[in-house]
View 1 (cartoon, rainbow, N blue to C red):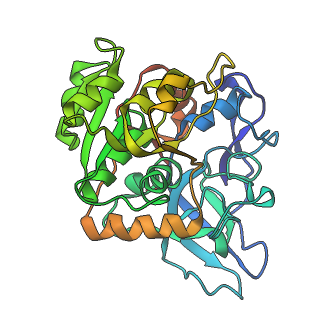
View 2 (cartoon, one colour; view 1 turned 45 degrees about the horizontal axis):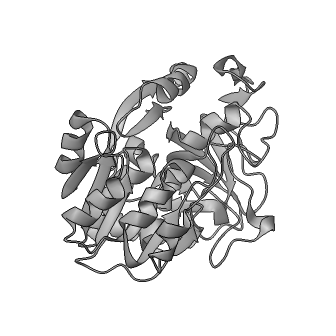
Length: 342
């Protein structure tokens, strides 16, 4: 079996492909399953892990990447949740099944647990989530982190109703999924970007209005203008310290702000001026991906509406380090995916 391992941190040379010469693994215990991985995808957290900027220290030698999808090829004798032939992914927090997360549930594939950048993955049956039938393997591999985060941001707080306005920031994977999910829920979407070309693509994806945040630094006021003074009912806040002030100013009086990032690359933290915060009754809710139940709920919506994730590029298994480099440097519009098996 071939698998990549993080042998060293600080650069892509530490991502090493190993071939142990053994046949495919077997279930490790009565409740485990073996998945032939078909595709995996990258997230920003994978770069943070590689460069040791992630809050949770990664295990040296760990198989990277939280996101992947594949076919169940073997099951332990006590497995009841899935069967051979099922199409599955692994939950981002495999031990977080439902309810609120607690400290003992923070293990993650590609960090403290072996991830999906391998030809086979051995998972406990409780970690597995069936993926929508209409998706390709590459599309299914994009869901566990960014898609679940966006879904949780939109649906995990107060009810988001048809006709409400959602504000998304930039064109990262979470923001793009948020545009798709918000339209699926019947909402109006306002998006920010710095690129006219990406603005056109956001409109094609469903954004009703796009604001250039470089030309309009006070884009919070611009959001209010395009919403007739009302502001956004929900802000998917993916920028952190660089954007939180304007996000508060862009929000409606009782806005929800789903806050994903609390620190900047320079070590800066969240700061909101008194003038902005005093003018609002906004609720700020921290979001960190979601539980297995959230993943399953999202998949039902994806299936019901035939939603298809955006993919920027697909690279072969042998080019995984190049996938990391491209993800870091090229500003992809959509997910970067690694095809592993036919």
